[in-house]
Image (cartoon, rainbow, N blue to C red; front, side):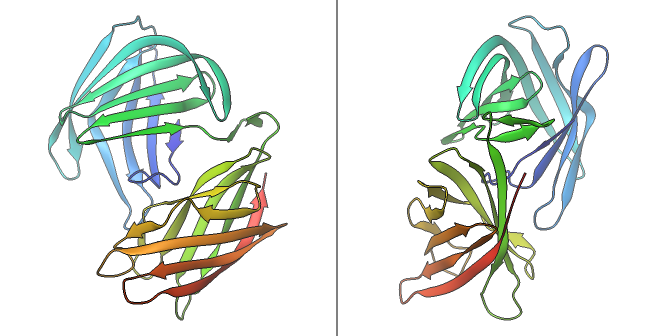
Length: 258
């Protein structure tokens, strides 16, 4: 099984590889498809849990990352079964797993039968976060029921040749829509941290608030986005506002839905 992450800061473009035998569920490793591609293989493979688990069961892994070296610690504890409600819908009988890491970071995951990861909480290291499944199409079944997932993608006019791409995903007819805009600079081979955008009507998408980043220049700059969906096309502009002046760049592309 593959788990793909899209539009999540620090995780965008990550693919995790999971498999199971008659007794255990393992993570083989993961790879990144953003920027300069890389991969990690766990040796031995990480044990995530047993196929027949009881609440309180713990599985401890000391594994070596290759390439790069270094031994890491992971403890996975099965906390039980719980029903979960997220924007994508209600998911009964979710597996509740707690992961502890050597650096004091905790991750709490909820996995729904036949769907996968539907909710994920993280804490430690001076920060915290929450992910919730907003929409998905798995094996021909849509979550939420009746929703359609669309992908908007295109280019940003920042000099010649045009080398900056954008994309974001959204589901209709769910409102309001909260998603993340991914921007990739081809010549530099890097992707910027995803920019949160929101739409109240499923047509106009705006940054929730000015997004500050150093990735457009040497100093923190504010980035604002305004995009409009019109049938199978998307258009708008991106504004970068450093201290001295601001610049506006046209955005345009296509929308495909399935």
